[in-house]
Image (tube, rainbow, N blue to C red; front, side, top):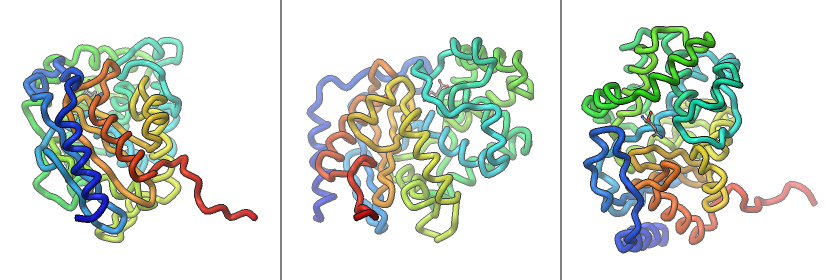
Length: 315
Ligand code: GLN
C-alpha cells in the first residue's frame, strides 16, 4: 500500500469510532432513513491514482454539491452575464435563508445557497427546455466522472418537491423581483432533480477532477472550463461552499469544498487531488460533521492546503 492509501484507510478506521456523528437531514423524506453510521472517502490524484476507504462505493444524494455542476454549465451557457442575477459574496446565513433577498432586491448572495442555485436553474431554462436542461446536467456529470450509470433518484426529487416549501418561497419571492423568469415550478423542478443526483464518493471525486487540473478533464484531456474559470469556481467554493460554515471550513481544512445535506463534501486540492467524503450526520450548519473532520485529518497528514507556501517566483 502506498502512503496515501494508508492515510485514507486510517482516517476511515478513526471515523468508525467517532460517537458524535451529527444529525441526518430529516426534512427531505428519503434522506431521513439513511444511517449515520456510514463513512466513505475517495481521493483521485492528479496522477490518476485512486485511494478509497469505507463506503466509497455506496451511492448517496449529492444534494447541494450539484450546485457546482449547475454553475459550471450555466457559466458555459451564458458566461459572465450570469453575475447580473447572482452575487459572489458569502451569505453568512443558512443555506435556505430568505432574509437577505428583501434588502438585496431578489439577487441571491452566491450560487451555492439555495436561492442562488434556483436562479441558476432558471438561467438554464432560458436556454434549454426543462427535460433538456436536466439531460444536460446528467450528461455533464456522467461525462466528468466517465461513468454513464449515474442516475437521478426520483424518489428523493419527488419527496423534495412535495415538502420544499422554503424553496418555493425563495423562488416566488425572487420572481416578485423579476429574478425568476419562469413559472416557479419549472426552475424548482430542475433544482430538485439536480439535487437528487445519486453518486458515490468514487464517482464524485472523478467528477471533480476538472477543478484540480486547471479546468481540464484529465481522463479525456478535454477542456471543461478555462483555467481562470476553474480557479474562480474554486474561489467561490472556499468562500461560499459551506454556507455560514464556510469560514470554519476554510480555517480547518483550507481547501475549496462544497457540501450537501446528504452528507457529502467535494473538496479540491488544486494541482493535487479531487476528494469526496460522505457521512450523513450533519452539524448545526447542515454540513457533514465527519466529512469535515476527515478532511481536516487528511490535510494535517498531507500538508494539502491552498494556503501552503508555493515555490516563489521572486528572489
Ligand atoms: N435540496 C436541498 C434543499 O434545497 C439542498 C440543500 C443542501 O444540500 N444544503 O434544501
